[in-house]
Length: 211
Image (cartoon, rainbow, N blue to C red):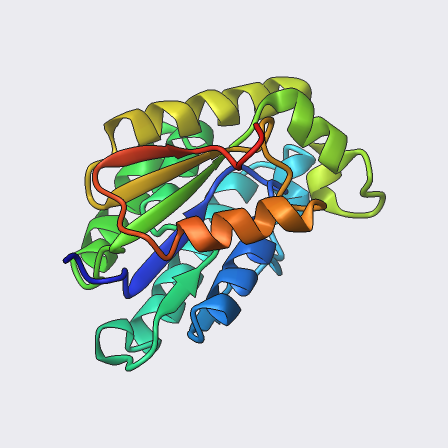
């Protein structure tokens, strides 16, 4: 029998529910969570289109995520580890937002850091439409994420779908958040948590009972 995954990464576009699922999954597996730091001092400047802000925001995120994962001792942990981010995802946003000269600098650091980190055993991709993400963002008022344009949301969703259509570093469970409401339906969340305790091979799709 395949072993249960030791290191699970939860991924998906902004405000799709990554943190909540990662926290719930870590609790369900009696493990620990490693959560992305949302305090990025350069994000507001990026959303306002300030020169250089995209590069500063990207490097801040890259270094912060590397530091969190490298200091966590994931491979030596006696308990399951669940993160609400996938390190490789950082590069996705870099290629969306940086120019060629900035990418050249960024990519040198990315390759260095990536070579020092373990790959997840399982990645959970929370797939979402731009319309669903906009509905989530509309509930926010003072959060900088609420300022993103519809075009940016559409580009992000397309980039995520393309990324996971080619991703092979770990097994993937795809959760269509238009078909299941893990944020507000406890039965859907419980069904997903139970599914994640079973082996996943390659890329599989999750639908709760009754869908």
